[in-house]
Image (tube, rainbow, N blue to C red):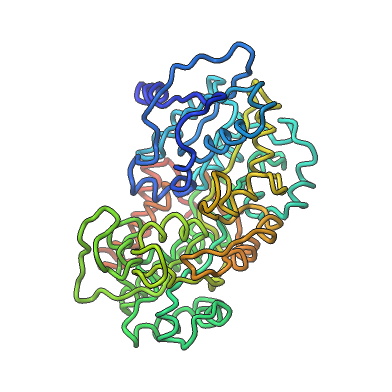
Length: 488
């Protein structure tokens, strides 16, 4: 507890009329829990402010794990003088690294010290449907009118609504991003193996269904390529296309058959030499985005082996393109490194990965202000709304980072052309991708359970355990670490 309290004290920041910090840093923040962990606390704030609350302003206490949502709120205050004259936003920003964010947030919620907060996909259901849902107000209770109709009119991705709906059937959280997944592939490799780099044709080479994906993997191997970098590239497609989550209605651990099949998928990839056997968010995984050429993003030399292959693609949402791959590839224009040699197409199976939901609390002391911010971030489809600016990369000026957003209406009227993809409009792929994602299988324990699961799968594929031993150890560790018993 002392650690959490000290973090809160060190990381509290006031956003008033003058604002603070540089909004442009938002481009590297967001809903990527795994990347946040891999890059440690690089995205966290370490400055503090003792700026007093103005006597004529209402205070909004905002908790977040990156500066993404705080900077959005800052931008809203800067561009809406009436709001800025009435409210002052106090930000407490704590990274998810080492599990610091949730304990501090939970303590503040218990003490009534939170008005608005951000939650990532890995743990958001704890606050919309789980142990901490009792602290969260529905959007309707905050004062946002006609929530269901606005969701319909905006064509908000259904999976985000499912995740954000509370046990009473009311929407308590929505996102601004849409994180429906696609397959992001190399154009030059597609031309070499399949004779075309056309996304409409490549989608038929790799799917629908896993059988066609494995056929493509075999064709790629004949030419010396791997279809993915590591088994983690396939995991999110498996996890979020399963029929059930990790827990049954009694709160006991279950293993969906599609998730159990990941043992076989991982082993098939390894035994057939269809990947480089990397772990996501490691230097080797990043290096595959660059064809293992030159130095990595930190200036360190890449490590090659005799078995290292060029990699065809990655499963991921728009943020993997715009915040991860673009940071790793060499060059800033086509012809330098792998920049411009990428395209995106429909995956063999629908899935989503990540996302940030924005929530308000029952103890909120400035409900009108919180409702105004949340509606602008999650439901406003006008050209002045957050999502339109986010989709077109204009929130902080021209030529910013573009991203897929929750509203399909917004994406359909936006410019999704991306230089990394050689000018392809990524929204043509991500609008249907978001529609095919399923949010019903998430639980509040996914982050921890997924980590245990993937460790056991890798021990099986490396020959350290049998499948039966790995599954038994998985169940035991979940019970030991999370006090969750297996249903069988």
